[in-house]
View (cartoon, rainbow, N blue to C red):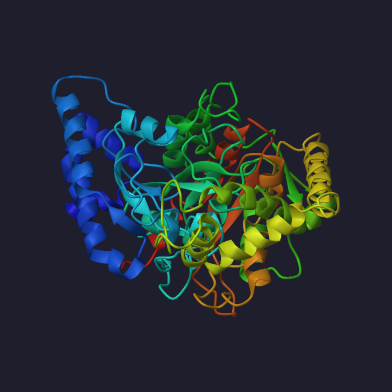
Length: 501
């Protein structure tokens, strides 16, 4: 029974809990048992909260017993990326500099999930301060891809994606700055959506790049991701960048798309997101997905977005610049690690020693790069120019959406690469985000949905491949509709084909 419960979708679990077929406590214990059984190999979690999770599940069961209404995901377990502030539970952002920090408040999305009866199992591993594409930059060791334990589950939300793919949790929260939801979803064979910037509150997310960071859902099905999106979305007066608009009808769109009818929809295949550097298995799966879209009635056309080729360079000036400002708060004074405070050294020395000991190599690299780009005499030449490129990318999207309802591409040029393969080559690591960066820079919604398994002779056979669907701002529902249609053509969630750990 325990094993069966961990294989059910979030929607099915919620239905069983609401009907009384199974208790929320039973569901929670089944997933905690699963974590104990496999997380030694996967390392998806940094910390689990058995007492808190059990108490949350008991509260759901009490509500059901008293005849109180339950939310659509009440009693369903979730893995929460460790960049999301959680009251009373260690939150580190994957960094030694915050090891042991217990926040006194909840992020807005944490509060919303608690109010919805979602059971938070614990905090998921991640690249330090969300800087990375493999979780290898975590100060607490990498996570592993359940499809092949010697490969990365992506990053920076690799712990979240691994937890869902390993059946340790049916749902997870990730954050996406340049692709950190979509790329992990693609390489672990699950669904991951980056909402429109401002569509989900950023209050209580430990900031990396404030104009780019966006929390979003992971699920094993498109409907599960949509249900979670509906819980966490919406306006938040605590977040100055939050949009005061209704949450798009993402659940209805997911149900509509599952019928497999895309008649009247025009899909643009982005010419610049393919070709040299893309694995044959990735390109073959993408071509097959495009053909499936046509079979379902969509009109598929090629579109050119000429400035997408500059997205990588623009992102790696904008994001590090904002990071150098945001991470200045870790000063060894207010909270977190403090090194060298012996009563002899002055504040500047203590701050330098703390940052040296607390920040990892990638974080230091980006702080240095960002500080340089913002320095006197270089601001206009680097940061200012990158922002102009960002505008050109947004204009490319606007032009494409004049004729297309959605744009599609692979979410990442390769399948899951081996752990250690790119650690000493930052540019190769950064290239994992080539396809996801344009939508991030433009603040647009984009989803990664499984598109099949690679079938190539280059060692990637049998590894999951995704399809990225991008839509105009606030048209998140279009992403879910097309993603659900693709899922339907596969005959259900791809994760069902994953090897059992």
